[in-house]
Image (cartoon, rainbow, N blue to C red):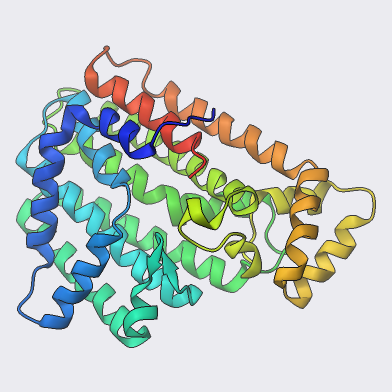
Length: 334
C-alpha cells in the first residue's frame, strides 16, 4: 500500500486517542534524563531533534486504553520503554560504527564512542530508577528479561550475523525476535499490565504475542527497505545492513533457494566483503531469486498473525488505532 500523504499526518491521526498522554510521556521522558551536566543535556537535545516515531510508547498507551485504562504508571512505563529503546540505539551505533541515525549524526559520530557508551549506560540507570518507582515486580521482571533478550540478539548477530553458513531462517527469526520484537512485545504487555485490566493474564498473553509478531513484520520490512528504499526516506545509508554483512531475509532466501549458480557468486562477494560496487548485483539477486517476494509474503503473514490477536477485543478508538498503526509500520515506504 503506497500512500502519498505525509506519514507524520497519518501518525498524528492514529495517535489521536492518546495524544494528551503522549505529551505527558514526552515531559516524563525529559524529566527522566535531565541533568546538571552540560554535555548530557547537549546530547539529550541532539537526540530530541532526531527523535523517532515513538512507536513503543504509542503501542503501550493504546494497549492500556484498549484493555482497561491509561494510568499514571502507563505513562511512566511508556517513557521508560522509550528510554530503553534510545539506550539500545546509542549502543547499537557504536557496535555498528554508524555515523547516521534518523537523518542526523549519531551520538558516536558527534561525541565519540566512549561518550556514547557512557550515555547509553546513563539511560539504562534511569530506566532502573523509574522501575523502582513503578513498584510492580512483574514490570521489573519483564523489563529485565527484555534487556537480556536484546543483548542475546546483539551478541548472536555480532558473532554470526555475517556468516551465511551458520545463519539459516530459523536462526534469523530467533535473532529478530530477540533483537527487535522483544521490546515491542514488552511495550504491549506492559500496556496491559499497567491498565488495571479485568482479564490480566489473558490480555498480557494476547498483547505480548501481538507485539512480537508485529515486531518481526516490522524488521522484515526494514530488511526489504534496506534493498529497495532511498537514503532520503530512511534517514540512514541504503543497504547499510548488507554492506555490514548482516544477514537479511531476502538475501538469506536467495542463497538457500537460487538454483542457477548465482548463489555461489553472491556468497563469494559476501565473504570477501561487500562494497558499494556490489550493491546492484546483490539487489538484483534478491529480486531475481524470489527473495524480495518471499520476504514480502512473510511480512504479510506476521502482520496478519499480529492482527488476529486483536479480534476478541470490542471495537474502540484504541483498537482501531492499533490496527491502523500495524498497517502503518508494515506498509511503510519511509
